[in-house]
Image (cartoon, rainbow, N blue to C red):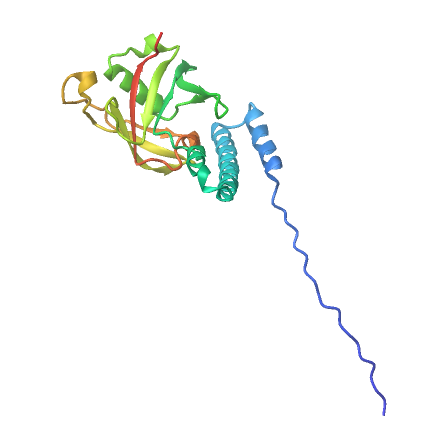
Length: 223
């Protein structure tokens, strides 16, 4: 009687290779698109939106890490930690100025420069200025734009959220204005038909989520 030699089969192993590009590489690609003078407008917008999306992811990770560190601190620091949370300020102010046919703004605090109000938003700002008795051409070097997700006594106009599109958010200018201080009467202003605008992802620097309502007022800059 013969005995066959026993053989041991080696278990098969599977190696998974992650081909997902690094964020640094992805940003390099998007920057190349923005630097390419032959890139289409839609391609430039998509690249900008992707960069903003990556920035929001990094901000979210940083925020979560900050919250974890805060939980390790004593209760005596609770009030200070609340002040460090993002987007707690209710009323914000920017100073848009006119550039290349559109209203744009800078915000050094978050690294924005000549961020444009596009796709109908510059026209809405023109209307709000004129409705407040301000000639847009007279404030081309800048005006004061104050806004909040909550109504306040000096707010004069408001926008209603319509939905998301192209990585941003669509808003419509509301047809009612009830500011007694500015207009000295309870009045309605006529909003041109279809006066809608699009706010780019930079909106998320000022709000955690796109607000259902954005209240605003415009005024001349203080000299």
